[in-house]
Length: 346
Image (cartoon, rainbow, N blue to C red; front, side, top):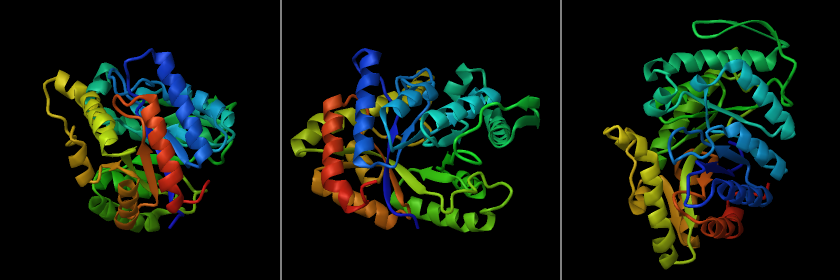
C-alpha cells in the first residue's frame, strides 16, 4: 500500500463576508497546507447553492496554482455533464501546465438532480452523458487530434494544439460512495475517494483492490502511469483548543454546513438522499467527521487508517460558518501535533 498521506477537501461555502475576502482567505489557508506537506487540494463543484462559491473550479484552481509550489490540485469533481468536452480538455491542459504538472482530474456526473436540472441536464441521462464525455476527454488529452462520434458529442479531427504536462494525462480521481462506483473506479485504474463509516470503507477498499487487479494495465486504465492508485476518504475536521472551543466553533459550524448541503433538497420539499446530519457528535460516532482536542483527533485519525483500508485521508478544515482564524488554528494544530505521527512531511 502507498505511504499514508493527507489531503484537503473544500466546498468553499458562502460566509457572511464579501466573496473576494472568502477567496483570499481560502488561498492563504491552502498556502499553509502546501507548506505543511499535504499531498493534494481537492475542490468540489456545486451550482445554485451556498455550498459552493467556486462553481467554475478551474478558475479558482488557477489561482491556487499561482499561490502554491508542491501541493497537487484539482476538482473533486468536475461535473462532466455540464461541460463541453473539447473546452474542458483545453482547460485541463492549461491548468496542468500552469501548475507545473501538479493537476489532478476528479470526474463525476453530479449527485444533485436539482443542480443538473438548473442546467437542463436530465438526471436520468447524466450517467450516459458522463461516460461519453469522459471517453472524449481522455481521447483529447492523449492524442494530437480529437476524433469522437457518440450520442451526445461529435468531433472530427480537431487539432489538439495544447497538451498536458503529465503524460499520457493527469491522474484521474473518482468519488466512490456505492459498490457500483467503487467498481467503476477500479476498472479504470482511478484514484478512489469515498466517505461513510470506516467499516463500510473497509469493504469498499477490499472490493476496489480485487477489481483493480483484474483491470490494471488494461485498455480502460486511465492512470497507466500510476502503479498503485490511492484509496482515500473525506472527513470534516476540527482540532479544538479545548472542549469549549469545540462547543463554540465546530458544533454550530457543522450545523451551518448541513443547512448548506441540504438547502436545494429542502427548497424542493424533498428528503435529502444521503443521510446527512447536523449533529457533529453523531457524525463523529458514524466516522464521517473527525473533531475534538488534539489527543482525540489523533485517536480518530489512527482509527481511520487502522480500520478503513485507506491510505489517504482528505480533510475539510473550512466548513459551515467557521471563521478563517478558527480554520487556520485548527489546521495548525493538526499539522504540528497530529499529522507528524502518521505521515512524513511531504
